[in-house]
Amino acid sequence: MKKIICILTIAAVSFTSCKKWLDINQNPNVGQEADPTPEQRLPPILAQFVDGYESAGTRAALVTQQLATVYVNGLAAYEMSRWNSTAASSAIAGWPWQSWYVNTAVNIQPMIAAAQKVDAWHYVGVGKIMKAWGFGYMADYYGMLPYDEFDDPKVLTPKFDDGAYVQTKVLALLDEAIADLQKTQGAIAPALSKGDYLHGGSATDWIKMAYALKARFLLHTSKKAGFNPQAVLDLLDKAPKTDDEGAIMQYVDESPATSTVQAALQYVNINNNYRPTKLFIDYLTNKYTGAPTGANNMEDPRAALMIPSATDAGGVLVRSEGVDMASDMPKSGPAASDARFITLRKNPVAPKPGDKIVSTGSWYTQRGGKGLLITNAEMRFIEAEMLFRQGKRPEALAAYKAGIRSHMNTMGIAGTTIDNFLASTSVVQNAQDITMSHIMIQKWIALSYSPEAWMDMRRMNFCADAGGNYNEATGVYKGFKRPSHVMAEGYPNPTDWPRRCAVPSYEINYNMVKVLEANPNAGNPTYMAEPVWWDKP
Image (cartoon, rainbow, N blue to C red):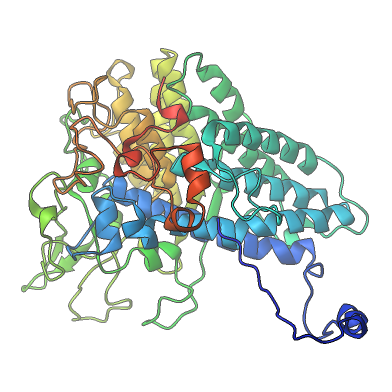
């Protein structure tokens, strides 16, 4: 990445007499780099990380077809929906990179160093978890990135490390973090609760999160020879098992009704250009090939919370249609004014009786909502997948249902409603009937707007067969097709699918030599269809 150096040019004067003066003068009214304590450093690290992570999820949702956009020529999000993450859409594809490196990663080691000075081992452990989490998901997102040299002040053009190498470093960091969080804090160390608003100072919950991350990263290698489902299950045994043990960001909306400042991040990210897709609605309403069905069907109670509605001319609420990404519509639409496709932001924010409802909004985009970073629901779906791989179908069915229940609990759906839905024929009831597709589609719903949904789709090869061709009979994500407006230069063959995000323009512009040393194809559009290390046998 580019590192900025400020150079002060001094006129030809005697510098000797000035040197001492320059050395001793520090403004006592301005904080110095070494001043902030661990508890002061952690809150902004968490905030900046969540911004980048949830933003990466919004962008991944355009790739996984959870989100569509209105047609605006040159709109960066529209480009991402056609799987174009090249420099032309760097405002979209590049933000997770900038948010991680510039706003978050560079601040973690100073926090760790400050914590070590006072034996604040819990802050050291949390710092290592955040470093591992950030570099781990970014390596999976982009395929390669600077790791070893990213914060070396002597290196202006850091080398790129492959994701496989980064994962070894990440897993080691998580082991170190677990050990640090189990240590006794020093006598003058600040309590973790003073800086931790994600887990309220619970070292136990942070340890569980470290195991959850280890399970995630190991899960990504499911295509590799020797993958061991039991190893993942062993990690899950030490990961979150209840809804309150997950990592969930609770936003507090303190802004005026007309402002987006301080609103939930997905409210800010998913602006009025975004619309739900047909695939998203089909999955929520069980309208896909092989969906559970029978005599006692019941609509998923999450549908009303996640699919926006608007009042028609007669004042009746009508649910949004979904944009069919495989149809011709994305080539020139939908138009922002097309009332069939409703924005995901609630409008009006606080409707009064008789007001026209432009949109009821979505649970994920509500102001003062929640950011689901790591959840019990995700852990249960991973468990279901591992058990299914082991041939333990009754246990896999139970975990699949537990994942659905957990996600609905987090959304605040009443327990009796959840019970009724889980007992309906809209959910798999017999162990012999459950498939990998059932498990993964429900996980896809529970991981709405999460980077992990894209990790899963790549592992499962989308809805393609072994040859890469769309095949609804054998594919996992039924109905997921290449968009009609797909970027032809990047995906010229019908077997080409989105496998990684393009190298951000910052690196292309200022560090291209190192980029090409790591991957000579990185400057070509087809680079985006090139599998990352774990996405191939």
